[in-house]
Length: 331
Image 1 (cartoon, helix red, strand yellow):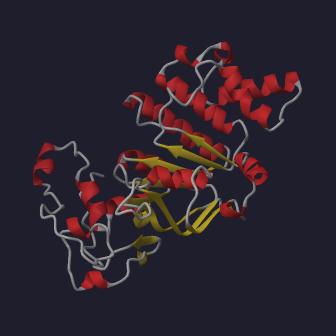
Image 2 (cartoon, one colour):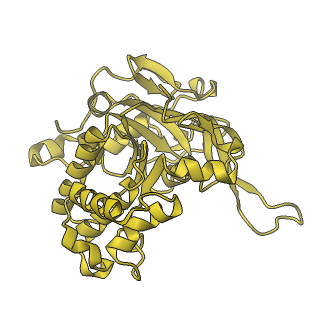
Image 3 (cartoon, rainbow, N blue to C red):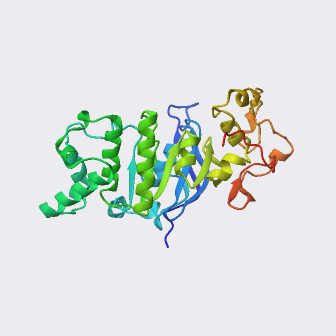
């Protein structure tokens, strides 16, 4: 079976712009030595703070951004080797749901036109009756009604618009769905509906999914595995429950310590796990060294790479292991 996404030693940078001392523009690394895999029917969560490179990684997987080195294979196809015609074929296998349901839909098109556009591009469902049946089945799959087909996006709520965006992504029956924070712009009650819809669709259609989120609770509910990113690097990957209850990297521990706990007494007992001292990173390869409370200069000289700490649990840190059970996340 072909692996939906296989990334090896990916590196991507952006030019800073401008001229420095009459020389060439300086390149800023955005993704450094990323290695990740999304398995068949697996939902991989990508978690990290804003600006860490999550969306850029998603754009690379979608072929919207070019990368300087490494390997990115989607359904067994190396993206660097694909022609324009090859990318068009790949579009049928890989689709995306964007973060903002208000700007991702064309306000001049009806729902019918929005959902038919992918079929027009790829010359599918030419027969009118067959297309109408496919449309009705598609809107029904995302919890909408056939009566909604002739309406415009401004006539729907945020949750309904995101359902339309999901229906558009499913129109070509892809094997991989990239979801870039699809619930962050929605109310909490609506978030639950969309998450349940994504989970149900993934199971019924045997979809693989790359799910980007800031919220550990959302990732815990939906994802099979979680990868934690920081400053363009993957610092830890593990099954969702294992990562939340036994984090091995100090950054993951710091993220989990910031998750609110319903019990006020337990909240008072929690101590901040991030050091207030901002030391110079120096030659240490770890991007988190300046903020790490476990920092040890001697051990930080080793190369930064993901090492297996337990079955299926990988961590990129020189100081391993920390504690057997140290999660502050409320079960």
